[in-house]
Length: 67
Image (cartoon, rainbow, N blue to C red; front, side, top):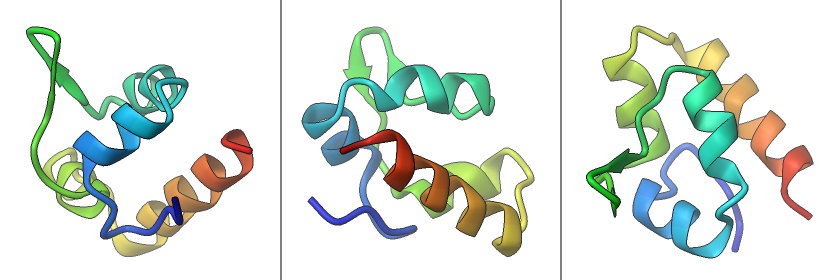
């Protein structure tokens, strides 16, 4: 799975459960009542006030976190 800002949160969490703790540290909720949140990484990050540069950094860090 290639991770981009357009990657859906649901797919990311399903394919790479380790991403949950990273996203939670960033303040991006990726689970609601045990169910994956709908939307893309970009949408979720923008809801939390991240700008484009910060979103690119999140994507980069996720790529480094996930083998």
